[in-house]
Image 1 (cartoon, rainbow, N blue to C red):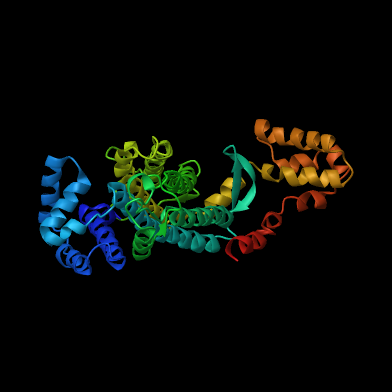
Image 2 (cartoon, one colour):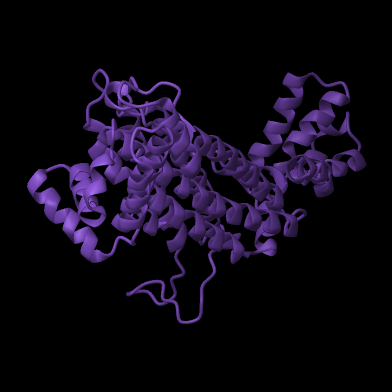
Length: 426
């Protein structure tokens, strides 16, 4: 990912845009065919540190990056270089190259998402029937399975992948339309040729730049994927807490958790992922603000994109691979999950008892009162929920002991797991 943003790769893309444009101009008879061949022959050499240093030296004088680039290219090509950049403007090169870089970045990010998806699917199937407590407001709610938790994250990353594919397609646009985008000094065939060679689609209507709503959507998509990483990381951080300890990051031999407390095994990777997600999302607002440029162009977006292009893509690439590694090696403790589920002595089955009473003819309001009254004894008196229900004559008047016991069956809560898995994994 870093290599995409290196000067050598950037200048290689700039050169290919210019050289392909020369080919198209030669086909149209605008420039000599020999000139187009000379551009490829003279300028097509690798952008070595020496060539890059020369471009930087020229830019230090001209204060213009594209002019510095074309000047150095002319030094390599010779007299025929006068035909380079015919009818083009700087944004034709810069915007088209940025589109190439972002599509290259998207391809790497899609590979990272695929690794996360593979890890989540594997661990979800492994723990499809591993019962654990579901929580709402961080408080015990009803039983679920750890596999279902992971399946939910898998489905979220699937949506993220689809969004990223769409964002890649939307950003893969080429603009070779000249000053203010009118093609006054260019045949639209040049743009079509360059787009085809660079794997892009011609921008339907550019001003002098590619409209930045495309870029805003691209970076917003990266921000959403980062948020999905953070949601998964936050779940693991909670599950690794000493009081919970249902799952934890892998702790390798020789790893140290604290400089002061040798016993510590901290969720450092998922805390790191939480911070990285913030960094990626920090690139979204500037991308949104880049949409509103003055008239046919200004360059207020340029400085922003030189920062957020590398920052967002490199950071998210790192985060995706770190996230996948965490899931692949995640330590899961089924016994602790079951112990935590039973911690409140049956309260997690209160919803089933409520429904059973309504099915037995009790109004929902009265059923809720009966169940809550007995549930509060567990909270306040350290009682056992099942025992309290069986000792409540109002409850036993409607439900037999066997019927009450039936509501405490863990298997009931897993009865549709296969249905959900089929929806998610096919």
